Amino acid sequence: MKTSTLFSVVSLALFASCSSSRYVNYLRSNTETVTTDSLQFNSLAEDFYKNKLFLVGEVHEVESSPKIDYAMFTQLDKAINIDIYLAEMDIAQAYYLRQYLRGSDELELENILKKWAVFIGSISEQYRDKWKNLRDYYAQLPEARKFKLVGIDKTADFELTRKLLTEKLPKKYHKDLPAEKDRLIAWSKDQLSTILEHEKSQFDTNTTNLLENIEYNLSNYDKSRNRDTFMHQNFKRLFNQNQWGSKNIYGNFGFFHTLQAYSYSLAGRIKKDTTLPYADKMVSMNTLYVDSRLTADSNALPRFMQDKGKAFTRFRYSQDNRLFLYIQGIADYKKVTKPNSISLIKLDAENSPYLNSTRGTKVKKLITIWDAYDIIEGTSTTDYAQYIFFVRNADWIKPDTL
Image (cartoon, rainbow, N blue to C red; front, top):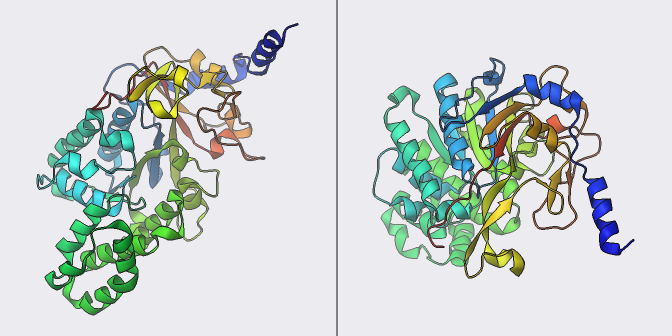
């Protein structure tokens, strides 16, 4: 037998796409499929809404992602009134985006998002449309029900951070504010905490907290490259500063950040932090994709996979791809859903088989193109997330420049 033939046979045997009747029978009773743009999910039970922290995980570069974020947030807000929207952006970006949601046009949306860590969100109309829709939604809310958008990510836009400092610090300090990133970090370490202590009586509580949080993020910027570490620490600081214990909180993040089983992901850190009250009061709703497309930087792909001559490639993305990314048990999800749809799957209902296995989560691959997380021994699928948005046949996020 030729080597190539043997390789194909072994591959097919290893990643056989068989569904399991046990899992399919469970899914038929715990899956809601939506085929319209409204994305209203009616299967969420009363117990779901009793959580205090709701996290939605996505692959940013798929066109369904901003739609699911907006739909899930507004559904939760209408049902239980979300107090805090956690954004995967830094303090200054979130501050000015919050002003934008409130109706300010001082800064154009493009300038607020231009250095957003979610890169596709900084160069696509589809993400800008999400924020525009959220602004319209915010405007019609009564004052008592208005939410607060908060950024907890590591500092990404130092120009916006400097602008915010000039707005909040007394004018006498402005001339000493460096414009360059490394010098601004050094200035924060050397001077900002002293300035805040000296001028504290001039600030209200919100301004003091804001400036202290900026100082913390700048002064600690070089201590860790891990964004999840920063996001956890920022979340914890804000929780304590603002007494969030009774608040309903929603967050939208990249897929990995919302996986609860790990000790090093944002969700895992929050869940395992005994000083926070979320061990049994948080839910992760993560997204899986088949027969879809995503936006890929062409330079990050092997040449034969690139859209020739294009800066970005409309890349085939399917988590049942036996070469690049294959989720064991994904055939079960496909069995109970339809093409061109988004389905909400509850994984942790009573007697769920996902409570005691890693089917539907464990990843296999032969060629590494996309990062895949490793399953921790002794864990099950529901340790990582309790719900799945199962997306079929979604398109890419179209970038501004092709």
